[in-house]
Image 1 (tube, one colour):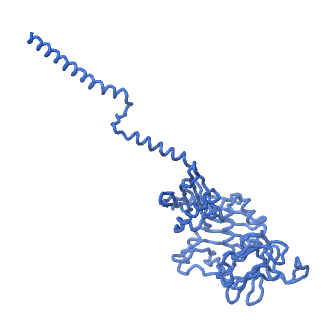
Image 2 (tube, one colour; image 1 turned 60 degrees about the horizontal axis):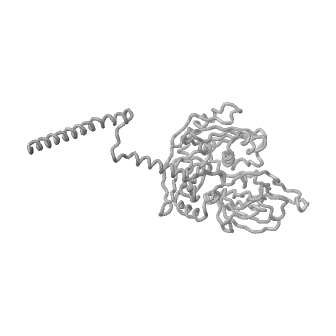
Image 3 (cartoon, helix red, strand yellow; image 1 turned 90 degrees about the vertical axis):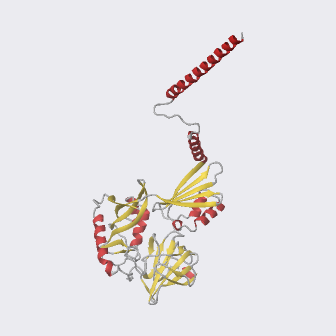
Length: 442
C-alpha cells in the first residue's frame, strides 16, 4: 500500500514538473511573437528605464513655458533711448532702473542706432519682464535674463551680409520731398545732407533740377533687411557745381569723407546751424524789421523752424555769452578762434550743461529754436563775425580740415575708382534704387 502511494506521488510530481516546463516554454516562445506583432517595422523595444517619458516631459515644459510668456519687438528709431522705450512698453520704473544699471558697462548699448532690434519677453500671468534681447546692426545679440541673483547678460552673434545699393533722385522742392518721391529712407537723406553740410546749405542753396546719386550699405540677416549702413560714395549736382564725396579711412587715422582729390569735406564751420527747416530772411544791410516796422541792418540769417528744433554749434569753440539780450531774447555767442565768433538768438531754451566757459564741439546741440525777444514767430537768428565785423555766413569761404595723408593718396585714388565703377551702374533716372552684387559676411 505504502509503495503504491509513493509511486502515485512520484508520478504526480513528474506531471507537475512537466506542466511547469510546458508553461515556461510556451511563455518563452510567445514573448518574441508578441513583441514582433506589437512593434512597428524598425522599432526597438524600450527598456524599462526608457528616456521617452523624460523627453515628453521636457517638450511639455517647453510648450508650457512658451504659453506662459508673451513678447513684443521694437525697432529702434532716431531719438529713441532705452529708458523711454522700456517704460512705453509697460516695464515698471524700478525694473528699468535695474536693467539700465546691468547694461551700464555694455558698449553695445551706449549708442543706439536706427534699425536695431529690442525684444521684450513678459510673463503672461504677472506681466513681469523676464528676458530682453537686443540685436545691433553688426548682428551681435545681447540676451539679458532675470535670475534669482538679478539680471545676467550673455552675448552671441548672427551673421550679417552687407550689400552695396544705389539710390538717386532729383530736387523739385526740397531734399526731404525728393526722398519721399523716390522712396529713399529719410535717414539716408539726412546723412547725405550731413556729408555735404560744409559745402551746401540745404535750406537755401538747393535749386529745382539739382540731382544726386549715392552708394550705401544695406545689412541683411537671415535674408531680411535689418537696416541701412553708411553712405560710402555720393555725387551731388548743385546748380553748375558738382560735389563728390568718398568715405575713406587711412590706417591709424580717423575715417572721413573726401573729394576726388583727397581733400577733406570737413571744414572749420558747418554752413548751417540746423539740420532741416527753411530760410525766412537772408543777410541784408537794410531790412524792414517785422515788429518795429523800421529799416535796420540785419547782419545775419533767420532760419524759420518749429519751436524746439535743435540748434547746433557750427564749429568747435568756447561759449562766451549765454544770457537774455534784449530783442534777441535767449542768446548764445561762441568764440571759435582768434578770428571768428558766431551767435544764436531767439532761442526757446538752452541745452543742458551749456554755460559761459563751456567748450563745445562742431554739431553739438547748444539750444532750441524759439521766439524769445522781438520775434514774430519761432526762428533762429544766426550771425557770424570775422575779425570783429559781421560777414554773410552763406557766402563766407571756410578753410578745410586735413586731406588724405600723401603716403595713402594712391590707395585712396584706387578706392575712388572702384566706387565710381559701382556708382556708374545706375541704369536710368527711373531706377531710383539698384542693388549691386557685392556682399561680405560680418
